[in-house]
Image 1 (spheres, rainbow, N blue to C red):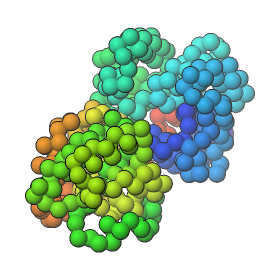
Image 2 (cartoon, rainbow, N blue to C red; image 1 turned 180 degrees about the vertical axis):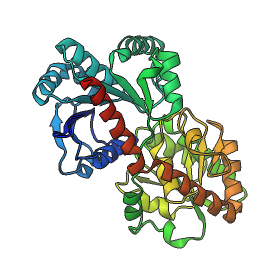
Image 3 (cartoon, rainbow, N blue to C red; image 1 turned 180 degrees about the horizontal axis):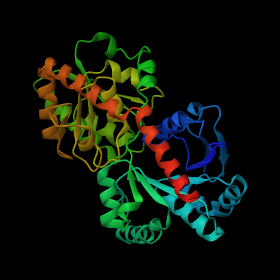
Length: 384
């Protein structure tokens, strides 16, 4: 690398709405070495709660494409932007944006290095969210075009194997780098006061669920598990997040007569103050990538119960050593794990402490250095 200049990295994402990808991207942009790299950000839609978290030196380009349908029309604007900025590496996130970035490079005849990144197990996502025809089309497109990128960055080994086995991605093109967790930021934010009355009573253990209220997160199994748990033990459940399944989930709560024991607190810009005062964290997802909520809860010392969903939890948790793993979509197994923890405060403390220690392996300082090293390696090889 030429040490006399900084190398420009153009990160591309859809928006900065609340979510694991968006927070991970903020952490990457915050901690990249500015002595060597100049990161910029391209958004298809410049909106989202995470915009205010961006470092002040990040230049943001807005393509002003508000939805997934119009985002395909961004190709000429994106090409023009790349021609103007002349980045050393283009780095795009999520399969739709990845395909658009690849097509932009091909159509415009761009020579820039292009890294793509999948943050979820794509085959599982397609199985749950698309019909057979759409699924086949997407698989075909990914198989044809992903290999035309310079390389791919994924966040778990399981996602790597998924790309190799189901999408024909050459293994030598794939790097595995987990999501970075900004533990210092979490420790600062978790000190804030929680106004919710349950956290001031401390008469019952409080179970926390965190994430968008969508089917993927499996909250119906968490709610059903609480019904089973409360036949023997007192516990309350706080669900943090909003989404299209909220009405359905609240209806289920009424059907199970749990209105007095489950609280939906909506989206919280600072969920960490709730996590810090909770008793147990539950990830009840059907599928994931590298679940940021799970890692952040563990970082704050909360004992965690997580499904063995594809992918992420099994690469974070060692079962019964720093958390508990259960089968997917199984409220009985979840209730059994919760009851065990609710009965045993020493076990909760042990798992919480071990979980917090485990998340140090994913600290932003360590993980973002890996991103920096990969970017420098690609630049060096290109110069050579």
